[in-house]
Length: 267
Image (cartoon, rainbow, N blue to C red; front, top):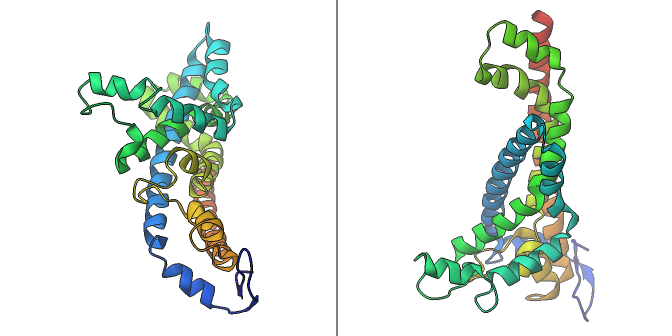
């Protein structure tokens, strides 16, 4: 399909490779969508991994409230992403939601204005949704990794007089690297393929400022162009980019693991 002239509704189908690939790169929203997707991926990945790790430490260190905290943090993951997006769309609504009037009372906006009405507001409003929805999931992945670290290692480090920071940097992070690698790969891949949250909250607006690559695929296929061939060509480009990004991540993380094993063997 990506190498053919393939209209959505009617028309002649025929081989036209590589026209779809050159045409999709020439689209006005192609490079802005790529740039926005990469920016969103970096922001979401950093926040989710950092917050997930912080929540994992909190749950691990808690003794009395551990079960309550774990359940509370995991609860948003039970809600589907589309349902969560609709919930936040209502919360952000200037007509029925509480957030827009609150921002006005705090003096952050002039009048009751939707947080989704500006490019930066739309981005960060969506990031808040994603962090709320997925932080508990990454907390669980990292918590499993933390609990797999033997307590004897920490005890030996404390006996040797290691500080909390030295234990975190020299023991926790190296031994947690497999869980961090899995979390990072999943977060990066999911962010690069973001669609539901932006389609429901912003529709790619305002003025195309929150158009992701997958949204552009949908738009080319069913809205602006109604050209399945161009949409398929962009899908193939996204697939190849994901393969390259994941291979780079896996090689980098594998190299780090090999370094840790060599240091451990030398010690």
